[in-house]
Amino acid sequence: MNDFPFLGILTLLPLVGAVVVAAIPKRRSELAKIVAFVWSLVVLALTIVMWVAFKTGGARFQFHESYAWIPSWDARFTFAADGIALVMLMLIAILMPVVILASWHDVDQSKRSAPTYFALLLAFEFTMIGVFAAADVFLFYVFFEVMLIPMYFIIGSFGGQRRQYAAVKFFLYSLVGGLFMLASVIGLWALAGHTFDFAHLMDSAQAINQGTARWLFLGFFVAFAIKAPFFPFHTWLPDAGGAAPAGAAALLVGVMDKVGTFGILRYCLVLFPEASRWFAPAALVLGVIGILYAALLAVGQNDLKRLVSYTSIAHFGFIAIGIFAFTSQAGTGSVLYMVNHGLATGLLFIVVGMFVARRGSNLVSDFGGAGKTMPVMAGILFFAGLASLALPGTAPFISEFLVLIGTFTVHKVYAVIATAGIILAAAYVLWMFQRTTQGTVNPALEAVPAMKKDITLREKVVVAPLILLLLLLGFYPKPVTDVINPAVQATMQDVGTTDPGPTAVANGRAAR
Image 1: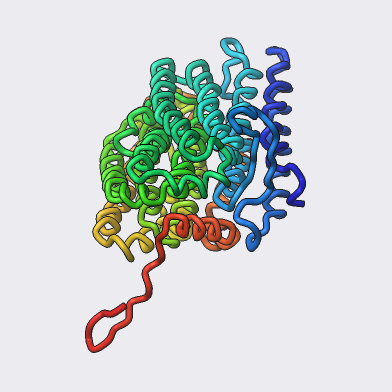
Image 2 (image 1 turned 180 degrees about the vertical axis):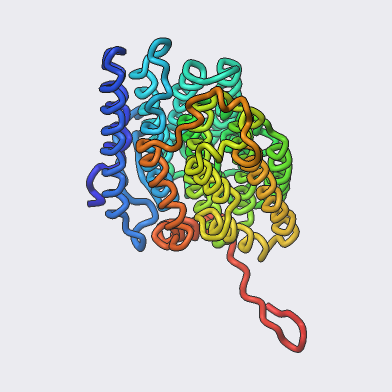
């Protein structure tokens, strides 16, 4: 089945769906929603078939396809997926139908067009799949930039307060980062044999002068650090996450931001191994600062959606130190963290969106005691918060543990400092939950009839898959780690690093 054009079809399918949904008249909003939801389920089904067809002991890159595009540049529509790309494609496929169902009533039909909104969601899925499936550097860059367009319109047209400011800031930050990457892409093409094919670049890029390679690495890294976002390139995310509709925010933080960390793993480390090692100390410092800085800011937030956005910046700090520790354990933990963070933060954003939709406000101070009128919803919010802080038994705990233990073997100081982020995570999650759902019921809630309605059947269907996956992967992550491990080990070999050997005790002293 590796000869079947999985990735080409998987990439184009949401785009076709977006065109179909956009063509539905505005007055037929229910039909548009149903078509978008069914279309996303078809994408999920195809992704599951591709997952089953993937051979964990086979070639590093599978499902290879290549079609002519711009012959004079040697740019082609080339697709291929390793284990890292595959798990991200599965994350996209799982989250999209959940987000569509969660966003069922998010569009005010009297003011905006529901078909347009759901068409933009499918268009965004098209660009996300394309960026993870691309095996041509120029094609990757095109998807990297085009994915800004649907999210810009989602935030700017369908978002909340300050949506236009947030949309422009999000677009400009990402566009500037993309220009840095474009300069490096052109330089790479000129210096590595006038080709954009990733398989050829893996070999030819090694001949680039060391100093030049560091500059090329920096162009890619800045673009990916902004997209991730890593400290200090993070300031666009709280605004965008706070203004975007909850479902779109779940995709923005749960998947789109992973393009940055994926890009570092796929392109920075593999194409510029020496430069990656040279920049690693600075990246580790930025990662640790991001963990502590974002966690401290999250503690003081009064806006629920901005709070969740800041927690994600802290989580990306863990992913960063896992990547630049250059051990198989930490690398596997980082990729697993990308998946688990998408599930946990996706659930948290969606549940927060349910609270905000009922109350009509993002502010924590406008709630208080909501758990007494909506006990099931409060319980799900509590679970989502515990998963976000990586409680044992939930999926993020496994990935965070792997990152920390893999980092500790080579960088003890960074790992120890990063553990302080776990304590701060408990503080901001529990403090948020307490102020929102516990204590005396806020008198203002009595005037909001929606705050007396607990979770609906549709909302149960939305949150159930994410809760089940967070619990399942918390106790049995093997199906995912088996897919990730070979790709991570191959990446570490490309970087030229090996895992530290076990420590033995000889004559009362530790010896390797």
